[in-house]
Length: 379
Image (cartoon, rainbow, N blue to C red):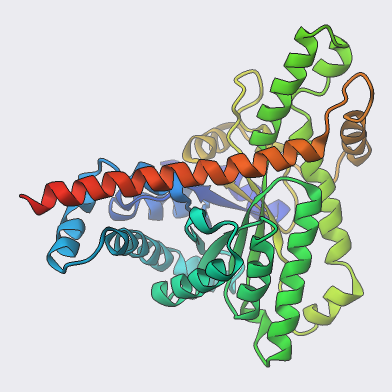
């Protein structure tokens, strides 16, 4: 694997960290993950129920641990956690040098609390703490959905001194609420005598899913006889415009006097993390969600195919603050009579879909794991 100059340039010149959106035991045990750190500059990794379903279901690499769990009389839920926690711990150990070299800026491994509790604040808080204690690594990040019920859990988990990755953020408003939840959590931690300099958090702001949803709506309006020029001009533009506006909000919040009080105690900003960055429409550049959103104090988490595409032909430049007026114009044009798309309705729909897209693979994984336990128990 040849060293990728574009990714290292994004990180070293423009101050954006590139993480990978994929985790499996195969890449841990084969040495591929270490190689990606060395030659692709990957400095963090995220997981979710869909990723673990893909990694575990039908993969014999986990069979020995499943059999050990069966012999120990463990339940399917306990076996699942053993498998996942082992992968997360091992990935944390591989990324520990990155964590140490960057003084805790990078080197994180994210694990999500069960998606089935996305709307249960109290259980999310207790599970986040249990996961953090069980994994027992300084560079683990607990993923909590940015639902109305999830944000109080984010605040409480940060206040407990736990790193948090707030996931499934689509609207600028939900991002703003997330940032303030982080700040309130740090304030509570500081009041309790905790060390705010040891806490790290990212706000995972989703991209391609927005364009997929919006493009479908725009296509439907054109097919119904709408203004083709105006409608087609918005295709593939909304997600990046939305992200650029969120970044401006980030600068406002983390430039405030309230934040400065925490910064004086060593607190780190909560970085915006660009998620869902694989381009779904083949008509668009396969690195558009990388090239267009390079900027300081951000993270971009890429699936393997996008990492390789970026390594080959990304064109790094500091674009996060370019064309802000145009971004605002894109978002305001959605309200025009010729377009008439309620962006809040879109964002609410995407959040519900996002939770569902994690619940279904989680339930599928648990079902396939249960079947495998029964199969191996009879061997």
